[in-house]
Length: 441
Ligand code: GUN
Ligand code: ZN
Image (cartoon, rainbow, N blue to C red; front, top):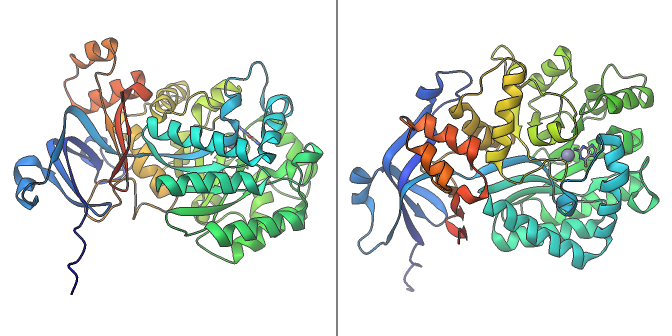
């Protein structure tokens, strides 16, 4: 009988940070699990053991190399719950708010994704950029062109990253070359969903861009696609900007609210992700709570476009908590780094009278994001059985950060310095399913 294949073993040593509980409903410091000198043993892409170096070493097969990251923090990889890969080239586009920004910059950029070679090039740069920032899972909008989805999933499959993505549906209020029809959108989405959903680590999201660019018929067919498979995702935008909200009211006068447009079409359900949700009311939040859908908080984007302030602590109110993840929303967002998103999330919270504790912040960017996507049984925390998607954070990546780190007297304060001062330079390395896919030069 042939010998069974040798399992692929990897051991990482450093300061381990993960979560035992939700820091928005319990004392944040108690919710955090921290090993000052920890050891992770990874076997075949999953965490096999995690504990103190001294205790866990005995589980390590003889001759296994330990990769030591002294002074670095080992965290679950970041989760980006809302981002547009085709908008990477048009990041930092000057001067407009949402609707004008879409017309002037976004639609012309997305038109270029008719060309599969261009789509492949940008998909490659985008995924490399995410990994460079420690992000290992994202919910990603492609463009209306099926080839943009093909390019994205092909590259993600090559990297073995756990990604959610889908073809944008738009059958009105967009340039002719970016429009599908309700039926074509359905057919193309179904073909992509059949080909990619559940293939390796790739997952499909039915992706109506937002209510103004889809007819009622298209939204209903999106609901019909979702009704075929409970495990498929849905992603769209919700109540980001006041002019947009007024436009939706005029396009769908029979609906109680913007969210109700989506609910009516069967789009509000578990694994649905609504970008922004700034201008929503209490009944909307109750609907989100009841349905299990998620909101993506995208602070760098909201500040950049002047869209408004997401009320994070309202959404997470323990009396009717809504699932919330963190999104970069590139190209309206200004950084691929979730550390930068947390920096701005902290300031948005300050502006709305709340204190975002660093442990709450890191939970949002990891375990909370995974929970928002109903993927918390696979990713977002470091524990035996979880998939080994990790990032290694260096709190002393720049002279300023090294100086600031000298005055850190707790792990919470160290995490706070990372989220306020950190970016891609803070990521020493990134691992995907136990394989190193990025290492800082
Ligand atoms: N609303 C509809 N489309 C978009 C988009 O591409 N970006 C943002 N930020 N909001 C949108
Ligand atoms: Zn967006």
